[in-house]
Structure formats: structure tokens, C-alpha cells
Length: 346
Ligand SMILES: [Zn+2]
Ligand SMILES: [Zn+2]
Image (cartoon, rainbow, N blue to C red; front, side, top):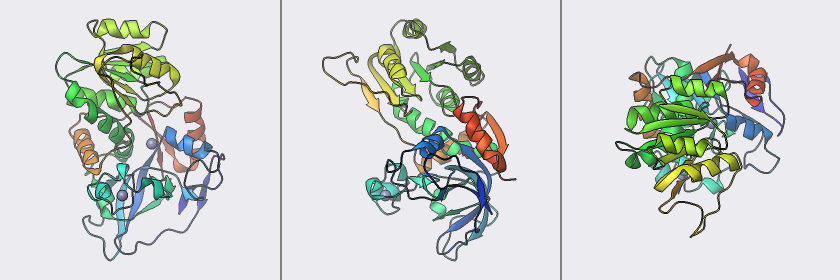
């Protein structure tokens, strides 16, 4: 089978031939129908040697949908031929967090040489993906694969971030989404579908603002020196109840801190290298709350899939054949990707 294997840090991989895995024990073999390409794949490819705990080589791809193709003799909970999306964060599998489906917050995270499928363990940018257990799978029914695959990270990460903010987002509240790409455009839709807040969007690209508009944002604006003032005006002059920062640079964090109302909450999702200084007293509003959500729980993935199947979520996906992965990676690098890039085995 073909697989996009990372063999050297800093080198964009190209598909190569590898042996198709055979499931043993509780393992499940999934025939991949689509695998999403994520900005964190670029961070992994570009990582300096020694900065990530992963051992090379491994196959990239942490957003995967497909069909169950073979079962190990001890596998249960999923049927042959069933269509599934893969819950990508893989923890130790035995701590209390993993047992509850919260592999994203595994208690043994620091001792593992991986963070999940395609992140230190073989992922789904391949014809087949071997999964350790059916507990990592969520059924998708007839949801198209290019819609389902991005739900497992772009959808799930956004959903988990919104879930932490939901108590603050009742009637007549304001949520600001910074960065309307693969995750951000789904965050806008999830805010619309699961909260009562008005949704304001910020990006540096005009076409991303058009995407925010199509996704249901009430207002979109380019990131400019006066953006905090414009957003504040749109919030009824009180400021935002919540900000979701999918970029995480010094500039976007400064905007987030400048637009939040007292008691407001910031969910920092993007790893753009910016930092905030926490001091009391300081520039952050009183009652300021910060969360650093990472990915999401298996149950939340099931909820995201249900939202998508109800028609409340639409992923703007650009499809590329797996053989064109290097070009797709290059497009994402240049900022030319629209919505989510999805690789399809050819
Ligand atoms: Zn990702
Ligand atoms: Zn664990």
C-alpha cells in the first residue's frame, strides 16, 4: 500500500510503498477514504530534531475516515464494512483519562513517544490505517468521507474549545473567532449551532472573511490596529464574553486581551508562538479566564458527527489525491488552502 511517511525532520515527505498491516488482538484495519491535512502536520514536518518525542519513520495523518476492512480476533464494538471516523488522540489506553475516552488528556502523556494517529504512530495518509482498538472509532453512517475526516480534529478541537466556553455564551453574549481556516470556520458553525451568542470573526485574509460569512458569522473584519474597537462596538460596547484564538501569535493574543470584557474567557487553540503575561494587577481584564484546549474526547467526536449528520456542520474541503500530497502541503504552507485540505487515496 502507499503511505506518506515522515522519514527525516524538515523534509516534506512523498508517498512510498509499505506493507499493508494485518490486525492482531483487538486491532482494527481501516481502509482509508479520506485524511485531512492540518497545519500541525506542517509543525511536525518542520520540527527540529529532538523537539518532539516521536520516533521516525511514521505515517502522517491524524484526521481519518474510512471503512473497516479487517478485524483482529479480539476486536469488538465495530462491524466489518462499517464506515467510521478515527478518534485521533491516542493515550496510554489504561489511565483513568483514557478509560473515559479522554485520551487527549492522558495522565501518562509525558511518558509516551506519540500523541496519536499520525503523531508519532502510523496515521491515515495511506491506503490503510491500523487502529489499536475499536474504542478509537466512531460510526459515521453515510456521511461523505471528505466531510467526516476533518471532524476528527478541525471539528472536534473546535467543539471541545466551544464546550468549555458554552456556560458563558447565553443570550445577548458575544464570541469572537480569530483565524477562520480549517478549524475556525467549523468553530463559527458550532457556535451558531450550540450557543445563543453572536459570532464575530477576524482574519488577515479577505477570502477567510467570506468563508466566515458563509459559515454563519454575524460580522467579519480584517485584523487591523482598530479591530478591538470595531469588535467592541459590535458587542454592544461591553466587549466579548469569549474569544477563541486559532492563531496564537503575539498580535492575536494582544487583540484577544484587548477585546474581552471583565469575566471574559479566552480559549487559546493556535500554537503561533505568541505569549501573554499574567500579572495582577495587569493588562488582562478582572475575572479573566484562560484555557488551553487540546483536541477533544471520544464522546465529543460522536456529538460532532451527530451535528454534521443533522446538517448543522459543513466542512469546506479541497480534495487532493494522496499522490499529490507534496503539492497539497506546499499550498497549505503558502496560505493558499481554502477551508480544509483532504487527501484521498488514488
Ligand atoms: Zn490537526
Ligand atoms: Zn492514558
